[in-house]
Length: 400
Image (cartoon, rainbow, N blue to C red; front, side, top):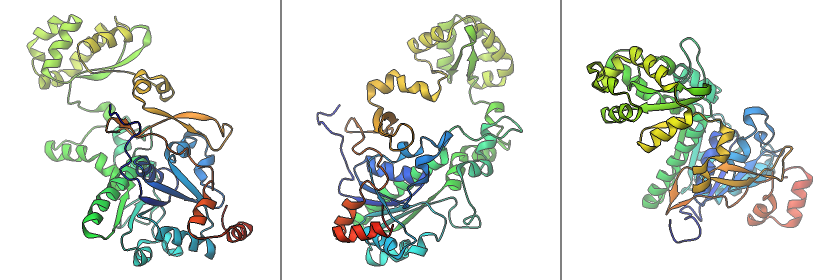
């Protein structure tokens, strides 16, 4: 670990204004904020809708909006749009994830803003990059279905979306990567640029390996539950007491260790299983034998054996069980955030941090997820609005 007391903030001094909602746009802003940027979240006058979602959406706002400030504006009013434009004039980066041409209505598109701020980097995160689909309404599930991911995740004939917002989160990450690249170029040329990322193209990137699998083999990729695995031992096994554990041996060296550790010398000596590709071809015969033999151990016993011998394994965990994960707790992978809305408003909960270290430090929480409009007055004063101006704007419900 580094001797310094605080994580580095490589983007300190950078101002980001984000007009975002749901997951993709807020993820982009969070990544930049975690690296030290001042990120200003422009919310509707009645607040970001994700503050009050139920079910799977309940975690959106507290997860993806830490380290940000909040200003609440009515962009549909002339005064609100003018405040937003003045705010963007002070920005290094503007990020948005609305439908095409939405920002044009308020003079908040790249062409309009860059006239007065040529150093501006503008991140547009969309459902689709410009083309025939660009005006469709996209959701993570929509692009998973049309982009081959749900087909690959589900059983044959039963497409199933992935268990988290993979395209939203990665689309936001690619937006942040684009922003970082544009910042480097701006340091060379002095000029900003427009960057776009999109859900559909992100999803196609995720399944690109299966597209090339088809190009190379001539055989369509089967859904993951029915796939031809690249490795013979690479599966979930039900063991003693009905417990489950994922076990793998993905090389000839690991197969040898696997057989010796478990006392399966007969399998090691069988020429039918001599190489990885031999074992893959024999998988229908090999797996039932392994399932029967491994059922004699408990999941904990197998985990101990695999850990001692350096073999890949994993317990089957639920998300809520990760709050107590010893590795996450020991390495600072979770941090307290204040909950802003709902029945637990004001309380704290553990949130996952960006999965990187810089100079040995995890990038932590400097600012809790903001209350709606928590920084409105501070930011308006910074733009030159006086107390009377702010009171008048509040009275007309332009700001909150």
